[in-house]
Image 1 (cartoon, one colour):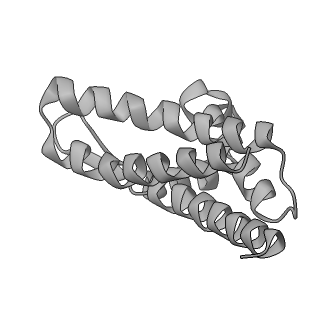
Image 2 (spheres, one colour):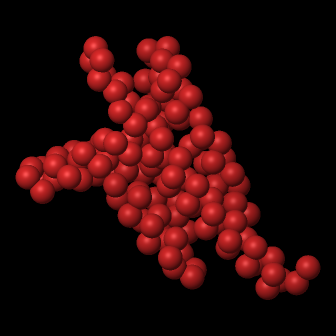
Length: 135
């Protein structure tokens, strides 16, 4: 296998896993109060739609950190050679939120939250392996 083909395959694998991390992030499940719950994609849409009337909702750390992570990964997705800093920082912004969800799921014994975090964690394992291999 030529070096060029290997590098092209590694870049394609990295892009697919970046996209996978971004997609699986949105399927995290939030539950609070008595009967209130939402998936992250629903909460994100509501926050973005409400940000026009109250922009202060965007500066909460639980919103700002994952949003910055998503933006960094989106930019990296379209770059021919994204910086490793951008890939790691973007992933970390999303992982912080999902690790918090994992802790909440474990502390409250919420199966729905634990199940919703699993795809992101599995995808993250492959993402990290790929980033380390393309060093």
